[in-house]
Image 1 (cartoon, rainbow, N blue to C red):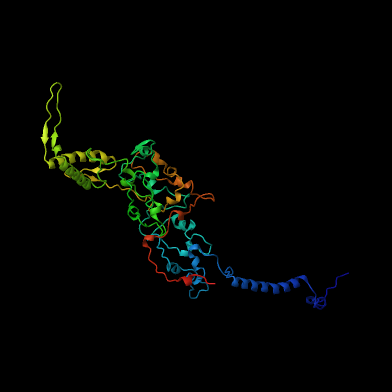
Image 2 (cartoon, rainbow, N blue to C red):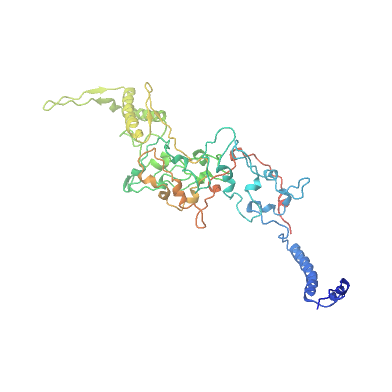
Length: 449
């Protein structure tokens, strides 16, 4: 039997037009939620308002350095015309602290917020990812003159070159003749018996207040005279006097063992100074001595006695200036040719009455484009990093640890020390930092209940 097709009118009669009047679980839940949800939302907003909880509208906690600006969003987020959002602008950053660019010939200058990401909690804003650095340094190009730096660096453990002083051809420019191997030997003869020297007997930061073991007891020179002040790579918070080692001085490290005596008549040593000052000191001492010991003006000549034929010694009578001149010549010959020459390089010029002492050229800072702190590494034995010092016999040896030594601790992984670029390098050229005058008051920066 063929099926009869219903008309539209017949089909419409099957629709229950009163379906919405009958109870249904979905409609009950919809009604319940449409009432409860707004009530809960209003209650939460009211609770957050009473408790000053800004999680409803805040992008996240500010860094510790900007925490005082938590309630001052407009200080950083400056509203611009024809713009819906108010982004943090570089001008807002520079209103409080000016960060000069890296190099004058860099291709572009990134925005402040591209490297220093805010609203991620109390983190260190300087802890930037390596990608901020490698966007240029993985394939370095500059404007104007060619770059003096390695062109392809992708990270500390990825195509990073050996430290510049340790590359082939590097030598220590210092002129002080120092044999570390000899000085680190056990049972050395010290001023009061046998001694064992340690690294901190000669190498300490300028801020150290401990007495020098073999020093004169005189106070160390101020830190600003013995260490370089803020250099290009150093951020304002960096303290070179705590990070680097001060150049060793004769008065602090050598005087007890290496005395500068010049004649058996005197217990006093000559001053550790320029040859002109040493000469004047020696002359004065002999002049004072002969004034109180005139009997020594009679000087016996050298004995030429032959077996069984003794001859009386010849005796010369000198004037005080002659006697002083001869004694000074003898003492200075000992000083210039042996005592001073043991450590210093002396330049003897024809016709010059006195030699010239070459400048010591002790390097205060080996890595001018990086920051390093001995203070942060003080828990490690010195020879763990400066292992070459125990075998070094030449002044020209550079005793710095190489990159492989640093990589033992500084590498990727949760159990390692920080190894990102910012740990050793800074972006801004702080030597060109501009002074900033404060404009905020405490009442503007702090929240009030």
